[in-house]
Length: 491
Image (tube, rainbow, N blue to C red; front, side):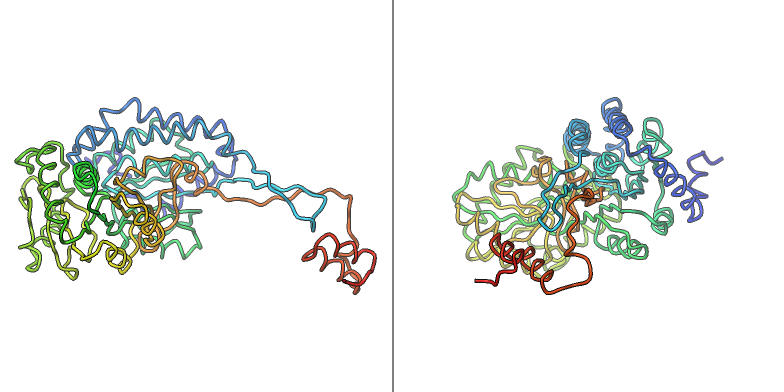
């Protein structure tokens, strides 16, 4: 006999989705989500989800991805706690209208920017960080005063089920819902009119989301991905650089992260030293038999395992492996794998890898790497290891990516004062910290005027004298205004 949740999924079609959205909009239109008290209470409840159910979350992530407890806590649970705590601390400040200057054309007047909620938000999250990427946008949507529907990824079923359970227990169900399911449920949700859709995933589905949103002129926040490069210069602390590359690649869900290093670019002369350093530090971190390491996540499912295998099996790539390459199909495990001098036209260099494979491309001069990177789609992140000031400046000024990091990888995501988002094919829009609040708010322009100071020059009948005064007000200095008022000719 089907469970209650299974029965819900059986009947979740466009009609059911429409009814749900109408119920949420009724709650939103009642005004309850606009108050500071409601927002703060829901953020505190979301914080309790992370604080009171840490072991359940760790267990779910282990079930879905064999994710190590350390990564589950540091990269998912702690990040959500930090997001909630920051939003709770800063909420009054974020909600307060921002006073702005006015111009002489509306004198006397005052003006402000009011942040108002957009309305009904749909969050479609990803499987690779299924707890973090589900709830982090929800923090911003709640802080901004919206009603929210969260659609977790069906590829992380244990986390999806746990999210549905905990959100149902802790959050205001008249305003915040979780919908589980796969393509059919997502399609039913996308048929509805939303006030913003936040999607994290790949570009192919991103196009589907954007096309669905366009039917209702709904804005989207797309967090996609791409091939995030790492440029490695000589004359650096190679051990530290290698460790930071490794933890950003294999220490982030075994390479299944949108900001993980996708490939390395270095000079032909320096490449052998870099390879040896990476191999040594990989052994230090994960032992000699890295395929069996408990500190590495497994591949999410057989389809992704087959996709990664295909990248390695290509004739022009298979002979380029200089470290790793071992696979365990039964347990969906692939050892950390390094490849050297892979061709630019190979699949591994034209598709986002999203796994534990790290190709190294060599160039004659490190400056050539910028042209190499810019010849492809703009990545979600780009990294540079160097001690040279001019190279850092050239990197920042030349490379277009969602975010840049010098002498480290991935940790820019932990800086709440920075926006996290893509550019071009790696996404649009950004969130994190105050940027999350702004992403789900409308910045409403408000001007306040009284009834004194009503200038007759703005009203018909129009005269040359009125036009002269208006021209002076719009484009002239104080002397021009005085001349226009007294009818004096321009000097």
